[in-house]
Amino acid sequence: MQIIVNKLTQKFYKTIIIGSGAGGATAAYQLSKNFDSICILEEGKKFNQSFFSNRKISSRSQKLWRNGGFTPLIGNPPLPFAEGVALGGTTVSNGGYLEDIDDRAYENLKNIMNLGNNDVKILRSNFSQIKKKFDTQKDKDQNFNGDSHILTKYLEKEKINYRFVDLARKNCCHNNQCISGCPISAKTTDVSLNLIPDSIKKGVDVFQNTKVLSIKKDGKNIVLSTNNKKYLFKCEKLILSAGALQTPFLLKKNGINNQVGKKIKFHLNYKVLANFNDKICAKKGTIFNIDINHFKNERFKFSASNFLEPYIFSTTSFLNNLEINRLNQRLDFLGMYVAQIEVRGYASLKSSIFSEPLIFYKLDDNDYKLIIKSIIEFCKILFGSGATELILPYGNGKILKSEKDLNEFVKSFKTKFMHFNCAHMMNSCPIGFENNILNNDASLIDSDNIFVLDASTLPTSSDSSPQLAIMSLVKFIIENNYPKFN
Ligand SMILES: Cc1cc2nc3c(=O)[nH]c(=O)nc-3n(C[C@H](O)[C@H](O)[C@H](O)COP(=O)(O)OP(=O)(O)OC[C@H]3O[C@@H](n4cnc5c(N)ncnc54)[C@H](O)[C@@H]3O)c2cc1C
Image (cartoon, rainbow, N blue to C red; front, side, top):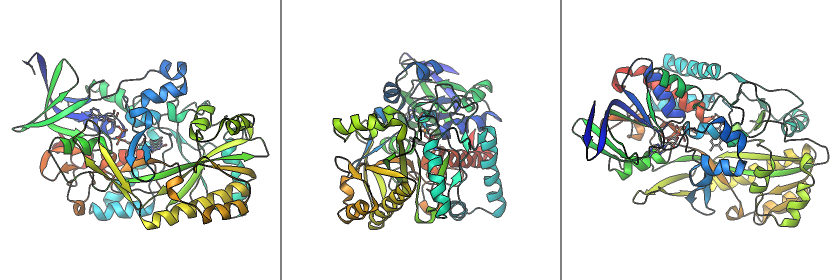
């Protein structure tokens, strides 16, 4: 139905989804199997393959991420967080690995959602079905990912656990650009290549470049104003899938729920550059093909990272020109590695009066110990694997040449001098009865026609890949509660 209101044409849908990333695309795909009158409103646009194959990585990153990839979390030190803004959301420019959540995370979900054993079985099977749909494979080819393979001899000798991970890609040419969008569309985690076109075929309307600015209740319906100059949107059911920061921001800013965004969980990352004696030719590869999950009970893990000049030199921008030039001569001998820590501290959405969310974070005392422990274990593995020099993101760059240097370094270590970034935000509107924000069907406790289905819903940070966890949970929630969504 279309009505003209103040020169805007009113568009009515039974269900509107805000955001087209992992959560929104899965919701659209699942709902379009049974219902019509669904639309997606997406702030970003569709980036075609020519965008990825023709443009420099730096200009791609500027366009694909909100604020060029630096949404700030205020604390000491400040942390940058990367939020994808594109048709497909963060899945367009994420790493492209899909791993199941671990038993601890299943147990957590089971408890907070009051799930029975059969529910857990269904949830587990969702993980495998999505992996199958996305064609995940392990890549053990020794001709690629030299930065990963160089570690395995030492890991095996020291009995440190690692695994070959499931990478979601088809006909990958090892361009090593996963986190800037794949130039040959090989990365199947990008939902703009699969779930969104499949949903459009089933009748879902998609409005790109359409940012939702306000949400208002109008009797039983919901009215959405956007930056789209043609339409005013109205629906009976609203699904928020705008990501772990934008979803609580929209809810709070529009006075719909004030409890959201209080305990946002996140992973803390830092990158180390390692200089080896042997050539490892890390450029020829993918983001990584093994991860070191030995320390998962201690809540940290390591892996290689995408390796190309723009990634290395933007990560080590704290070094002086002399150091940068020296490293530039050694490209074939370098590897860049990332540590990921599941911190206990959390971030909170403090204000929604500005046009962007204002987020603060705080670590707790255990996190500081964890950071130091992770640095020690990480550097030992890299030295043990043959690195002769490690460059740590600390102050103006800390160069370690031996374990003796490492021991000296940790004695005077101060967290505020580290250059961290943060990834994988979740739990800003968590599901689970004890959180008192969402019902088990992901509707808001106090508004049963407004749902949250994205990273915000995920109550658990774990050993897993968030995209797969979000998609499996969204599929599970929708399949268990179909009639409520349309
Ligand atoms: C560098 C990086 C690498 C990663 N690698 C992996 C990986 O390898 N494997 C994995 O499983 N996970 C990975 N992740 C995490 C994973 O990609 C995200 O957790 C997941 O995409 C989040 O899904 P989402 O639906 O919550 O949000 P998103 O995918 O971010 O989608 C949110 C969408 O909402 C849109 N939006 C926001 N506000 C509005 C508004 N007001 N109006 C309209 N639209 C709006 C945004 O433009 C965006 O398209 C990675 C994340 C990062 C940052």
